[in-house]
Amino acid sequence: MHDPYLLQVDNLSVSFDGFKAVDDLSLYVGMNEIRAIIGPNGAGKTTLLDLISGRTTPTSGSVSFNGTELVGKREYEIVRIGVGRKFQTPSVYDSLTVFENLEMSFPDNRGWWSAWRFRRTPEVTARVEEVAALIYLKEQLNERAETLSHGQKQWLEIGALLIQNPELLLLDEPVAGMSVRDREKTAELIVKLGEHRAVVVIEHDMEFVKQIAHRVTVLHQGKVLAEGRMEAIQADPKVIEVYLGH
Ligand SMILES: Nc1ncnc2c1ncn2[C@@H]1O[C@H](COP(=O)(O)OP(=O)(O)OP(=O)(O)O)[C@@H](O)[C@H]1O
Ligand SMILES: [Mg+2]
Image (tube, rainbow, N blue to C red; front, side, top):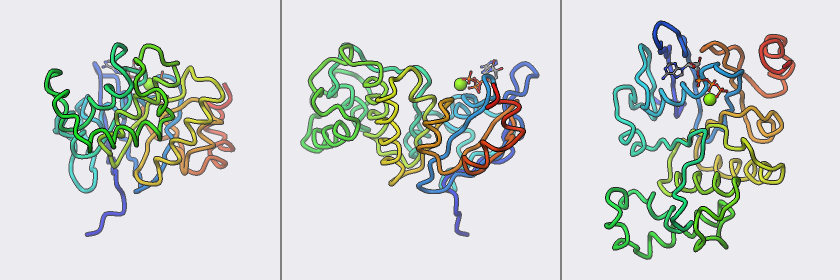
């Protein structure tokens, strides 16, 4: 049977000491869809990404990606299957250059450090340069990551995910702490990325969400409170009450 969704989350739940952080949640994301997840602090947004990416095991429910069940798989297997995940706080290797940070993420270059230097093939170099151009760091390839601005570090981390060419990107608050200009550039980047893959983005910045999202899912107390196009979400009294009104 043809499966119209790239990501299919069905009746997913997880409890921490009896507290349901994600509660019977279902979510369907299409190919090339940019989906924003919004909702108040503690709504379960990050936990949802933890469940999809294999970092947390659900109490019940299913996560299907391209028809493959992800529940029960290890994090690295899920990465290999095509799901890239960016965490809330950026983690790049400060003492390495932009080039090296990207190179390290190349699928065959993971593993022990001393090994990767030997594998700087023309293919790797070309891919690193291609990704660097996309994430606005073409001119910074030989600079150490520690010299980058906060925004540039966030882009570098997205770039590290792109090296592996994931079919689904999960981004947790990618523009938090960014300048207005960097937010705009990030929005442009994500729209571009969505041309060839699906992107699920958690964000609190509604201007940003408006710029990128095809559809918006509002989480509240581990459940889907509302879902739809941004205009409808912003006019929804339930959403205004628990989230947008604050
Ligand atoms: N490993 C864990 N152990 C216990 N409780 C957890 C764990 N992970 C998350 N929680 C709880 O689950 C709830 C949902 O947390 P989560 O981080 O998913 O929220 P969020 O929607 O991402 O919020 P924010 O907008 O603040 O990032 C919170 O009450 C949190 O304390
Ligand atoms: Mg969170």
